[in-house]
Image 1: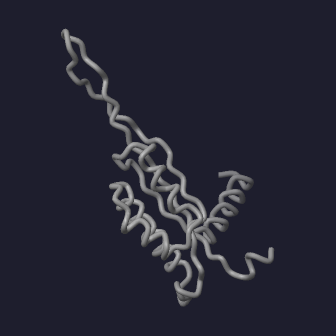
Image 2: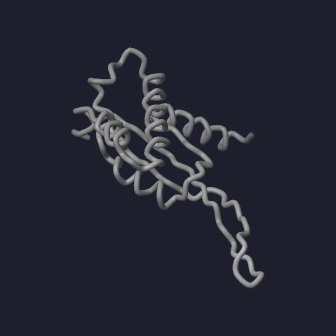
Image 3: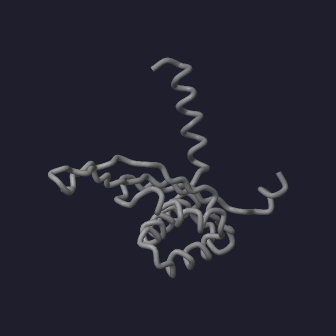
Length: 137
């Protein structure tokens, strides 16, 4: 590895130490349905987002709730000794991208076949803390 590439890799590694995120890959739900749930919690305070997800009737909300708990656990692992209640965590970004599609055939009238696309998605969720120092910058 060249020096420039190594330096850039080290910069990215240092930058990721201050980011707290969790990733869910190949979730067997269509991205459109998952985006409805993601839009509900984007920008919300973490405890309120957990409550909203817990009482939502959508199936995708269970998976996003678990992902949010994972992101919170990642924050706690990087910030040992800091209290979760005092940190003012919120959902900074949540992105839903299309994953792979399973293509299946369904019988149709008159000997034809229709293609069924079983969609999946990838979700990336970042949490951050709203501290007074961050608001002043």
